Amino acid sequence: MNHLIKSTSILPRLAKPHHKLPPFSSNKPKPISNNHQIAHKLTQITQFSTTKSNPTNTNSSNDAPEPIDAGSSFRKPVSLWPGVYHSPVTNALWEARSKFFEKGAFEVGEDRILQNGLVSKTPSQSRTSVEYKFASDYVLREQYRNPWNEIRMGKLLEDLDALAGTISYKHCSNSDGVTRPLLLVTASVDKILLKKPIQVDADLSLVGAVTWVGRSSMEMQLEVLQPSQDASQISNSLALVANFTFVARDGATGKSSPINQILPATTQEKMLWEQAEARNKMRKMKRAEQKNEINNKDVNGIDKLLAEGRVFVDLPALADRDSILIRDTCLQSSMICQPQQRNIHGRIFGGYLMRKASELAFSTAYTFAGASPRFVEVDHVDFVKPVDVGNFLRMKSCVLYTELQDPARPLINVEVVAHVTRPELRTSEVSNKFYFTYTVCPEATANGLKIRSVFPATEEEARRVIERMDEERPHDNY
Image (cartoon, rainbow, N blue to C red; front, side):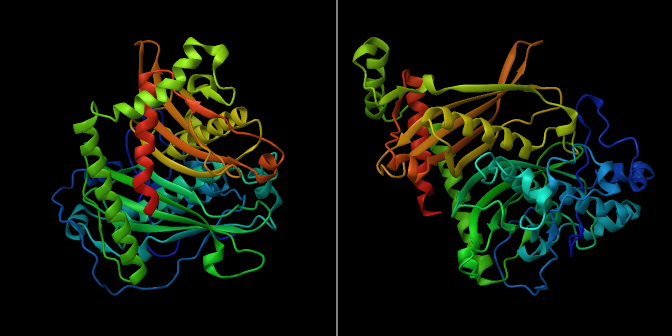
């Protein structure tokens, strides 16, 4: 199987890992071990343009890059990377990134880097695809199958984050694979929307590219494609759409760093750029509104939510049997973050956190509904603080609210909040926030399954519900 990414080389991220953990195994790649001084010099390069790009026409090659095969093969270079084997696709993507070192990219001089500086790229230059041959690869298929013979969405989310990371490397490297070492991290996930059910016994592919670039941030749109048995049209193949935002930081200072700009060339690329630009403006507007109106929320809405909740607290015998308090839907999990789950910065892989949050959210919806839930979308993910190896991570989940307008397709909105807890310091900080939406199969509702309403018991819970509902309304157009 061929595990190459065709076109631009990919630049790995270099940084000091947490607790002095070795960023690689003891068998270090020679291009790294023989060029520490040169690699250090690369982090000293400055003077980059900070001008934001605008979509204009440019001539570029339209050759489609060769897709990566996500089959479960093991090759020697992959074993040189930390925490590499999260899934078969992350295995393949790590291998693709390792090609950078095989080219000996650190053997060039500092003058050449300075002359190159930042470049502008088209979305097609970062486009990457990964193939899952589920129909013929039994081992691969079994790793993604859940007990209900459906796709494990948590593993797919993990793979999407890994693919987004690889795409960000491709965009931030120059045409010859030479650029400064950057820390490229997931900042947020705007939306992951399921368009149709994903089958675990049919081939599928992940495809994505950079669609928008700011000064130090970039947005990527990823798609999961799985052709329908009765149609081969691309519109019928689209199963899932995701929008990831990554930010770049300087490998030496940790401060935000300018990155290559983007030049959309086709009508489709320009349309995606405009949509991403609108989302970025909306995010900035909402952040400003939150700062100005954080204490001026809809008081009537909060009181209305609390009215029913107070009945549960003060008069539980008279409470509505078709309703439940938020606090009675809660689950939680805890873990010590292990070195095997670290990325090449020595921090915990963001896709792994998404998978663990997804699994807890699924369990929360399962115990709440009393039937196997069906994934609908990831509403939003915030990566507030990095999670380091050795951290004690606690994830707390709850059903925040339900939407019962359509009895045949009730929606269950689940919140998962991750806390980094340090017992020695007696501190706990929020590191991530995840929001998922589930439903139940039509057969369950047809057989009489009824999803209950959920109410807050405290003003803090009511504010979270109001904020989440307000967050969802502006996204209806995307």
